[in-house]
Image (cartoon, rainbow, N blue to C red):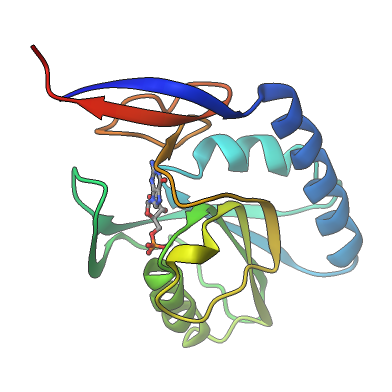
Length: 178
Ligand code: 5GP
């Protein structure tokens, strides 16, 4: 399969403004709290790296890796923890940073798992949300953009591990190679 960008959905400059806005809101909401940011690998790394620099508060970061999708664009419904946190989150104000919420299966599993570790609070911040595809009830506490049901790449998001370094978010078009 050959994949190419068929159109730009969200431009680099728009993303920059949105990330600033989210950072301001988070800074306001987490005054005097013990902010602990968890990035979900690999898709959230670009968003996380930009977002934490827009949060004017002391914070800690850690990462988790889960498997929910294979090399295809279909959900498998299976969530497995491939890398767990290095740190105890008991009594911390945890903010999960995710690239995109689609069916919601990954995050609802993760939230339940993290809640069992008894953080002081647990919220979700996602760059993109595809509410049309939801299989479980899940509303992000912070969200950059609601987008239609299309497969997107860039700004950390991949198609077969490609396109993560695009500075914008685009819709990918796949076709069989000649
Ligand atoms: P969920 O469990 O919410 O269905 O899956 C969320 C995960 O699926 C995201 O973290 C991301 O890895 C992947 N995903 C869902 N939609 C898209 C998409 O449009 N593009 C890309 N690249 N990944 C997606």
